[in-house]
Image (cartoon, rainbow, N blue to C red; front, side):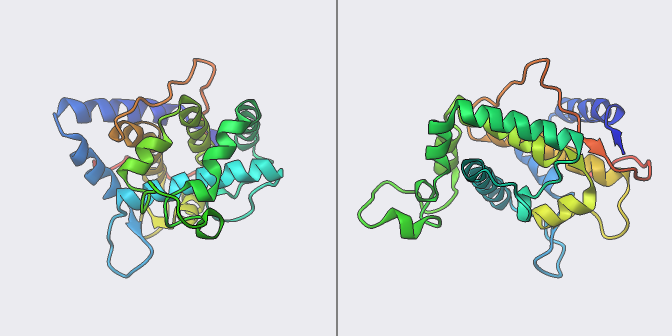
Length: 232
């Protein structure tokens, strides 16, 4: 296992060249999501950005509730191995940020403060102004707070702190290739990470959290074949 350094430089160049070609944000999203396909049916369909957005926000809310209970996630999207140095470091960063901003993060993590699809039994009757799903309006409201955006940034770094493609496929219920994973798969997942921390937030008409120079969290990459990325 080795930290990723050369790959980040490659991806930065790759994204700059994308913008120089003048492609719109929607084109970028379409091409990026087209690098993956879902496990739900035999047809190789790319995931919908709305479904990914729902999954990762639910995961963020769930992890905050796990901090409340002082439990370590062992399954689904948030499962982790805290014996891995990068994962343990980001766990501590997220937890410290949580305790500093406990009241605000506790409030936003409650299932009854989600859309109508969540927290039905806790919400009760008569509450108005609730969105039907994790739609654009709900997500804009969710990321309105700078505290939430900072917490979410750490959360995404945490999810991708151990860059093992098969593990990420399992967590996100996606496939990045049909056969054996190689370096191209790792680059696809890094692009998706960039999408979550920047493009998804910008798509909600708000500014992403800008990390300080000290917040340079490089993931650990499982040794894979060294092949170039394709598809964008």
